[in-house]
Image (cartoon, rainbow, N blue to C red):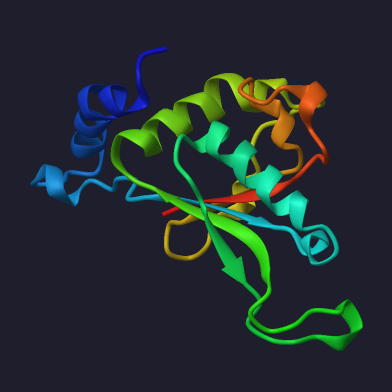
Length: 157
């Protein structure tokens, strides 16, 4: 399949413009960014886990995610404010469409018992949220070198 950005610009935009009677191309909805969030609460005990997850996210996303910190202290989880417990990356432009192409063409078909993406994950403003349970569905990840199987959230804005 061709890059999704080319397909969107050449095929989808004209069809949407015709179907919904948009006067300008600027009225057609388009994907602004993709936000990938990986919460890693186990990083409280194992600092090496966060750096390994960061290396694997670089392979998947093509850019380095930034580390997120805890906003509040929670004694029950032995969590202190300011402790690094997650990773987050915002993809835009070419990297966004490259990631989306790999997600749709190679990663999602590798999910066991894949039934399609649920329609009820849309919010009221046109954003879509998708949870990926295993990061090893991406071909960039070497399964033998994985320390822990991670799940992450993908938000299409």
